[in-house]
Length: 111
Image (tube, rainbow, N blue to C red; front, side):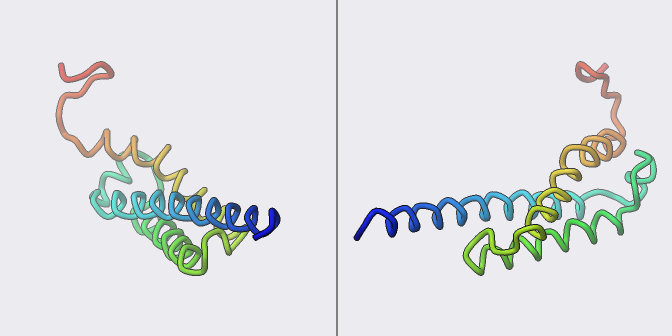
């Protein structure tokens, strides 16, 4: 086995691991979106649950297909899918989680 072949195997392994990480993020966003009530999305002034459910479901499908084909195979579509999931997790999830608790939660804990 020469050096170029070894580097090729290492690169493919790295792309596959990155594809698995992206797919895990997309599944996390999808499952979290399924857990919350539609009224929580409206109370947080975010788009509807249907919109976010569609975005995260399409992202998870693209991520799953990417992993099945060897990881990182969809290029710009894979990047768009993981970006949509990360936007949900970073922006929508905290806002929806805050409105859906119904408890007296302050910024430093319960009060």
